[in-house]
Length: 346
Image (cartoon, rainbow, N blue to C red; front, side, top):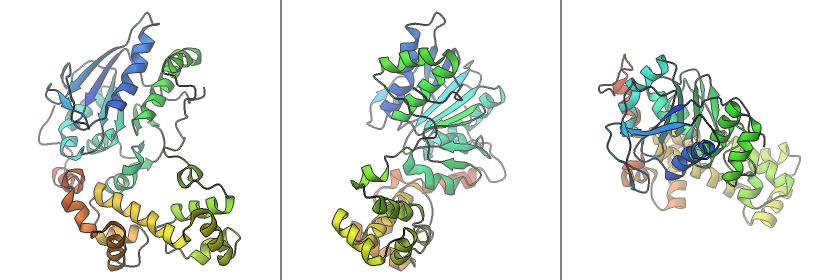
């Protein structure tokens, strides 16, 4: 096991803040390693579930999870986990004051899932590296340009740590146990979780291109990587072929043989998938999204989007308003006009 030993975030007293819409998988991946560790430790971990007002909190599946108490900035936690996922926008500002008080007292803060959004809304991530679920990294970077957003398994920045949650939370907890109790003990806890390989903090969140596309030809993989990394640029298929030392005809033939699709079609699909995520998870205008995804114009983007998904880009926001944090960005701008103090405090 080699998970990295820089995530020294655990304390004897741990608070776990549940934000509506969190995932049970993330909660289990935070709690279970602590429970297993307590089987062997003389000095046990003591954790408490908390919410904004002490009421039960619904997870993403609308299961109501009871908590031990309401969040209070004077709580004597040494570490506070902030668990959230989608639809964090309406709730993020509620916790800003309490989180800032915890930070001033030196409490270690761990944003899990979209917990980075809650921490960024409190102004605690400016100038720091942070991560969250890969679906939200691009819109997060657009909303919080002062935060260095990365698509990794967890990011450590002094006493603040962020993780995309779900299974990556287990990697973070095992790494944290290793940092505090040593490698052998961390292996013991990992084996109880049937976890034979714990990933390093800087490993990617998503599977690699060969696994995602079911193709292993090195030239196709190189072409897909280039297209994925530079899709916001006005890429030409001829240029892609040239940069991987193929002729355009050779590249077309390889894509047809191995993927039964043209490079242009796959590039368009990549761009449209990214655009769809930005529509749902950001407040960028349709014109800005078109530019960010490499389309020549908003009209070109709208036609391609309608052809792919059967509806215009604007429909993505009107049909799924609860998943769209555009209102959140506007709320941030209005709430933080000249100050980062929220109207309501914990």
